[in-house]
Image 1 (cartoon, rainbow, N blue to C red):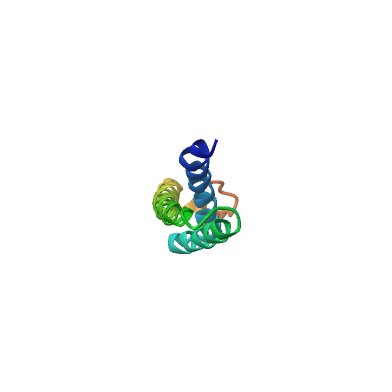
Image 2 (image 1 turned 90 degrees about the vertical axis):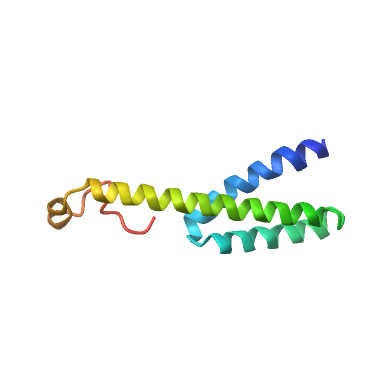
Length: 103
């Protein structure tokens, strides 16, 4: 059971939560710091200090996931922004693709 938890469930959960965190916070290093803080609390509350190595690995995975998500979101937003015409942006704010600001 622990084997599946350490090598399957926690990395997948880390990746998914990092993508969500990137969408909310928009700063990959902040997502990684948050992940590290959560895992350090879990390490000393539930597991032994041997889990600290896994905490560092999961933090690196979190940062990489958040950074890749940031690149994807930025690239996707730029593609949507260039697909709308400038007159459409100037005339109405109801454009579903590029007139959204923020998230």
